[in-house]
Image (cartoon, rainbow, N blue to C red; front, side, top):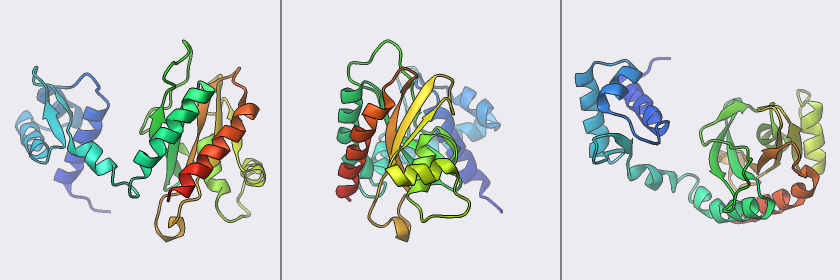
Length: 224
């Protein structure tokens, strides 16, 4: 597959900046994406022109205001509609709440919210994290919303039967995941396949959390 090199570099630049919450200089960004500094400055100038990047008072780069504006149009308003529901779920269960979508054969986290009053020990699930659909609760819940297949694992079959999935230690030792699929209008016509859930430490009462997760999934699905 052929790609546009300049566009590829611009997207990689955004990804690098997104991974540096404290900011990054143009020189360091250029080195990170493997281009000459002069090319790096031109890429940055173009991305700044479209408000995809901005500089702070120290000259370091951060994501610009156009990023959340674009994100708000993702399956129109899905993230905005889901955020208060997931925040409430996180607060009630004292665990990190998340939304993941299917991208090819992977699940990708597109929203992650910690409880307002977080415990000292918690497990984070970073936006942009990805893993195989067949691994961990988020992906298994997405697969469970699909039509039955001979390729389904026992975990997918069980998640489809009970309406949610619980996994332990599949992405991080000591972590527990609870997830339920979203039933979004338009999924069969190009809309996202998605799930929401919770991730927490091993002593988390995952069975008690399953009902709130399923209810939150129902509320988000009903908004679409």
